[in-house]
Length: 137
Image (cartoon, rainbow, N blue to C red; front, side, top):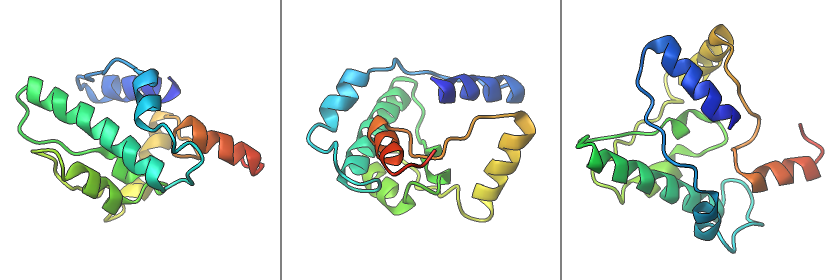
């Protein structure tokens, strides 16, 4: 919810329309079932990427948007190659690595400038659980 709140904030700052999907945690849990103990960047992440990108592809189709990318690739916690692999299943997916050419550093700079939330884990409850077990914030 915190990430969504800050995505809304950034959309307002930049004057962009933010198209939000309905949060469906039960469907995500079902899609990643059996992979709860996978390490970060493992098989659970691939299923999560597939789940998220399928929803984006569906919405792009409904809105007649011919191509789309994902900001998931700006994260240092997410391997772009795996995101591209998951995205290749969807027509119109553009494999853009937003970490490249200083993109990650720029994202930090912009987050500070606009006072945006940045988390220190991938975002799923299992990654957060594992970080807490390891004594990480």
